Image 1: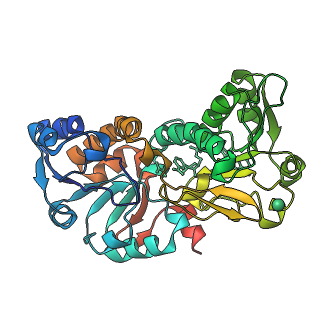
Image 2 (image 1 turned 120 degrees about the vertical axis):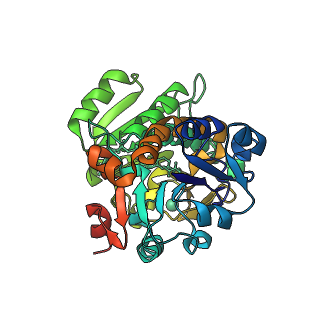
Length: 360
Ligand SMILES: NC(=O)C1=CN([C@@H]2O[C@H](COP(=O)(O)OP(=O)(O)OC[C@H]3O[C@@H](n4cnc5c(N)ncnc54)[C@H](O)[C@@H]3O)[C@@H](O)[C@H]2O)C=CC1
Ligand SMILES: CC(=O)C(=O)O
Ligand SMILES: [Mg+2]
């Protein structure tokens, strides 16, 4: 199979979908790999390393899309890439379709096959290609929250852990999945007073058993969220209904119950966000203020730590890519119903229920 790996062009997206090691593994199985020049640079991989692994370097993104049967990427194609996607081409990347009608329409029109990392499932119904990046973003959410709580960054001016004799900050985490648990561990480790909410009671039981005493689990409801708002310093949005548009758990009217300078990090922004006032931002300009509340809504958080994220992502994606390359996407999906769950758009049709519902 001919596999192409373009350079990511989203703002500050420094990850790459294939490492030289990944390229070598595919080439050893008889596949041909094309990598756009400098695609790996942000993650520490030179063109020479890809060439030494047997890959071919192409100068432009147009060249890669023109030659490859399968495109492997990190983030969804952005507008400039829409017209490069070819009829019948197979794309393996994050898409987050439910949050973008223009992207969905463009991919429908392209007649391509879009297999989305974020809806692939393993045997236990977990999301193996989302987990590693959720681990990264969950940890980063607290680093960024702490930074934007500082006065010069526009925040309230509070240290998450406090100091002896001074109370710590209060952190509310909405969603106790992968992002949520990582955020809770980081915030608790810094000494914050953490409240972690979810609607899955079994999950709350598991979390209660493994997290330290400065994390309190609470059932997620509008009533319980409202009760925390007047004293909360940092909110992390971390809910997910796979493939679907995220539910708005904090509506605009609720912001007025919070103190000016409190910070919201809506990690769920890639699925449209779980805070009504959330809109996607970039690493270059990560925050905006609504009703006195600082919003951080970067949709590609792991792109800022590519030395960690590229390896974590490709550790998970490469075994799937090898199966797709060896057998073709149709057989690979027929053999693995969990991989087939990744199919979101196939030759002009939406085939993933929650995406279809988002645009119904
Ligand atoms: N912005 C970024 O750069 C990144 C964003 N993400 C996103 O973060 C979000 C969370 O991902 P994961 O933690 O991996 O998902 P997950 O599936 O592990 O966890 C989501 C949790 O939300 C809970 N939930 C659902 N409805 C809820 C409600 N009404 N109230 C409270 N909890 C509720 C679920 O029970 C589940 O435990 C996703 O949208 C994911 O795409 C992930 C990585 C990077
Ligand atoms: C999952 C996601 O949105 C990211 O890693 O950028
Ligand atoms: Mg206010």
